[in-house]
Image (cartoon, rainbow, N blue to C red):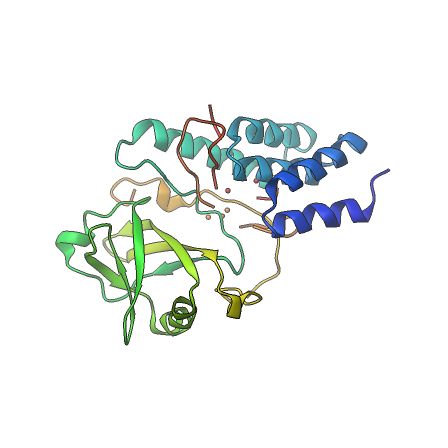
Length: 257
């Protein structure tokens, strides 16, 4: 019989990013209750995190067979399709993010004080960028170290403290819009001991899992998905063709062949 403790353990494993344990726990839950859509969603998320995109796809498809209106499974399936399309059609990047929102861990930011247009207009969604703490600001630079903009002052002040103590982050261009500017997607990778219990980005709303496909990713010339029970949020997809390589993405998480 399925117990509340089973669900709690599954959620705890996901929050701790112990994806192998999360897979084992959710498989155990499904063995007891094969129609548990929440467990199937969590299993899909865990598979995505360890790079098993095909198994993730199968898990989400199972959810939709049980509940055709399940928005979490639908959004993650769409995200997997977009990632696969980008991978097959792009030669510009070997690793494209899925923009999976994880409360406290990720944040989408509109840059201020954009850099030289000759540089910024060459940026595209999926391009990796670096965060550089300076004395009075936090700059965002491209792979060549060229400035493309700054973080807003309030966020920069917070980030400077984290960066100084040793927190590490990854960041990518999420969207480019001539009228609005460049948005980047920042993901916390590790926390310094001093901030072990402090999320990089304040939690402003109730946690719940949910991935989404950002409209900015589908662009013409302007070309999100984390973690408690059912959270509407966006990891990073690594576009490899090997199921042993991880694809950072809902919990329940996700690889293609």
